[in-house]
Length: 312
Image 1 (cartoon, rainbow, N blue to C red):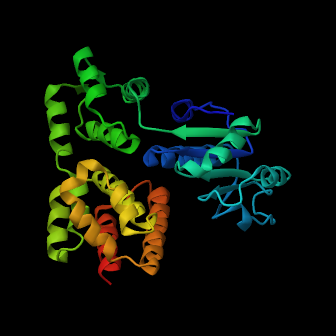
Image 2 (tube, rainbow, N blue to C red):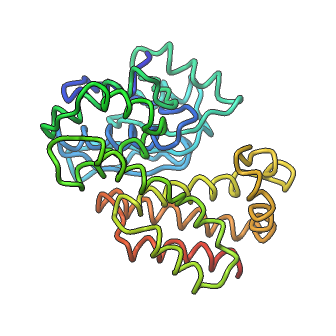
């Protein structure tokens, strides 16, 4: 069965009662948010133990601490097929698989789409309708006022990627005003023009320069979280590319000016370094979820650790 991601985010009573959840698409920040929301909803409703598995083949049913209630969070499609899914249905576990779109997973997605005990959740960039729903709920929740012109300006201006959309809304809260006016809007988008993703392109420079640009552009916890997702995007491009040619093709067109720098960074990565980078993303993600964000010092430490892995 198919489930709509925005409904899962906005409807507190959305019924999550399936054995399997396959969260996919091409918008990584929304994918991560949906997976996080599913986990939190299960934790809220009953005592449940969260376990991470790389593949179905890593799954081993074992006694748990909470009446055998377990949620397994998987980050790979390896081993997913109709036979293995049927076997897993005989366990007491809930399985959430998180995987970005690639051509090879079409058959796998079909399994989840047709199966009545599964939800297939495709995550793509926010469209206008989704942004309207999210913004209306935000204004209602925090009792904020915005006239019609300001409302539609925000719909057009706010990012289509979920985490950046959410971070910008949180910055409106930081302004401390109950009425969103043009002055607040100007402040918000003046901050957004700081091009935080540019910090990643400083990786091959001296630590002194990296720290300087970080302190200039990163001044709040929402800035740190935004930078983290930029860095995660670039790191995953490196990890998931098997050659310089493949990596070159994956670099977004709008980064043509930074392409040489990005390729220079990629050239420094061996298989061993990619594993170190993957472990860093994994440990940072755990911290981010546990503490609902990263502190300014944690963000800088994360950035400098990427630098250390890159040049080691």
